[in-house]
Image (cartoon, rainbow, N blue to C red; front, side, top):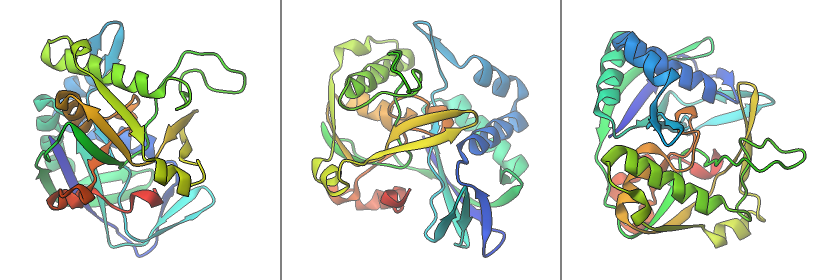
Amino acid sequence: MRIALTLENPRPQTTIPVNYNYHLASCLYAILEASSPDYALRLHQEGYAFQGKHFKLFTFSHLLVERRRIEQDRLVLQSPTVRWLIASPVEEFVMHLANGMLQRGVVRISSVALRVQEVTALPMPALNPTTRFTCLSPITMSTHTTVAGKNPLQYCRVEEDFYAKVVENLQRKYTLLTGNDGRSLTLSLAFDPDYVARRGGRIHKVLQYKDTRVFAYLAPFTAQGDVELLRVGYECGFGDGNSKGFGMVAVDSRQGADKHAEDRQIVDAL
C-alpha cells in the first residue's frame, strides 16, 4: 500500500538540511514507535531476514514540493504544503504507521515540525509487462567490489552489473513476501537513453546519509518482464537502501496512467 501525506509548511521560508533522508527515516521509526515500540525496535534492528540479508520492506519518497531552493547545505521550502509518500506491502507496517500518525500528527525534520494535514491511501496503478517509471527518490545498489576511492557498500554503476543486482534484489524480496521462488521471474531494466543523453550522461546523485556517502541514480526507466516483480519494486522500492529513502518510483503518467499523476512531482528537480 502507498500512503500520501500532505504536510503543512509552518513558514513561508522553512529551512531544513539538504540531506534530510536520515531525518525522515528517524521520523518514520518514531511514528511506528508511537503505535508499537516492540514493532519499531524489531523492524529497525532486525527487519525481515532472508538468505543472510535483512529487508525492511518499506520505502519513501523525497519531499515533493513545488517551490524550493538550495542554499549550500540547506533546503528552503517555499510552498505552503509538502507531500511525502510512504509505501510497504506489509499490513503490520501500514497499520502501525496509520496508528502512530494519528497519535503524533507531525513529521519532524531536524528542528522543524510539519503538521500532517491529510493522509491518503493511493490505489495500486495498472502495471503492464512493459512499464515506464520515474524516480521519486534515487535508486542505489550495493556492491562488495573494492574499488579505490569508492565506498564498496554503496557504489554500483550502470556500466558494471547495476541492473542485474537490482533484479536479483527484487527476486529476493518477492521470495520473502510470497514464499515462492523469485528466481523463476525475469525482468530487464534500462534508464531512458534520451533522458540520459539530454543530461549528458549525468544521472547520478551523491547523497549523505548520516556518515555514509551514497551513490545513486535518478532518471526515468523502463522495466520489461514479470509484473509480480514490478509490483514488488513499486511497493518495496527498487534497489536497496529502501528504508533510508531510496528506490521509490511512480508509473510515468505519459503512459496513460494520468489518474496516478499525483505520484509525479517535479522529479527532474529532485
